[in-house]
Amino acid sequence: QVQLVESGGGLVQTGGSLRLSCAASGNIISINAMGWYRQAPGKQRELVATVSSGGITNYGDSMKGRFTISRDNDKNTVYLQMNSPEPEDTAVYYCNLRQQRTLYWGQGTQVTVSS
Image 1 (cartoon, rainbow, N blue to C red):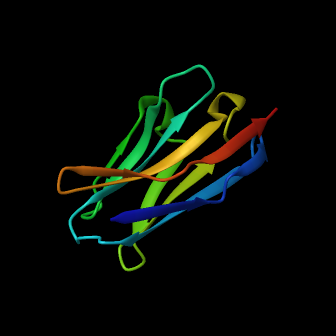
Image 2 (cartoon, one colour):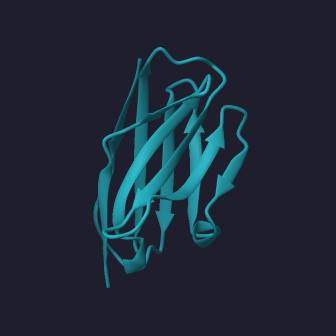
Image 3 (cartoon, helix red, strand yellow):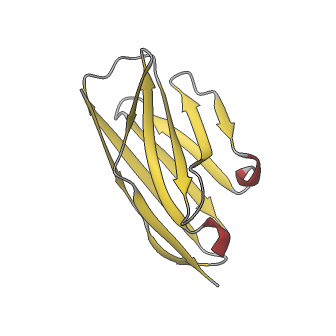
């Protein structure tokens, strides 16, 4: 089993910055992908960004140039740097890890952006 624990969510003002962290533990293999998704009230869950264990990144269209995903393989931790977020970025942000065709999810962390 794999456990994911997110941290760093909270309230941020437009023009500010926030960094989310997600630490994975348990039965983790070296080849995997980690990422962030988000879900706003009344909307479907959408891709924020993913990063492979080799460092290949993929971003949702509206996140490109504003958010940066990174990871520390030694710590099995993925980060999401959110710069100049907008109120539209308010959502619950979920961390996930994909390995060996299995997808694991964290509990989510609330991010609220005020104008």
